[in-house]
Image (cartoon, rainbow, N blue to C red):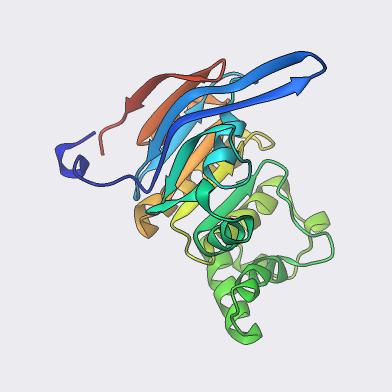
Length: 237
């Protein structure tokens, strides 16, 4: 980390996270005393083999899965001390999500997929559609606004998902294996779009991946094994 950003406060910080699942008489520890933080304006990549706890960590720090123990401070708020309704409102207002499976609505076209998120924030239909057009243009889909998911390639679907995540200008962006269903060229483009979101929007972007070939795009790399953080590396700005 450079001296210039050493005085900054993390956009999100987790301390002592634990999460386990009970199956029959067996308890399996998924997260074991995990500490984690991510900075605004940086892309943090969480890597590790399948079953290492990466996706569970992402769910815990984003308000999707309550940990058994530990704290998460997100944008100055104690996330897991909030009521569930406040957590939902916090995610809607401050968080963007990108998932491996795209999670698009089959009946909606690209413009409608993205505009819907803005409508949830109380924005009028006309303004929401205009913001959606701009967001889709930023990911190179200006000519694909009327396409439905069945008419799109995998790369196009994921770019719609990224536009949907970024259209409300979130401070926190969470991406769980966003490139794993894509070929190398499209995967590289998706990672670059997420990196640009951290640079140009000053968002804290957290990307979970088992694919190590894009590590050079990250500012910070957090490696997990068996539910623990075993190494954190920094790339110079």
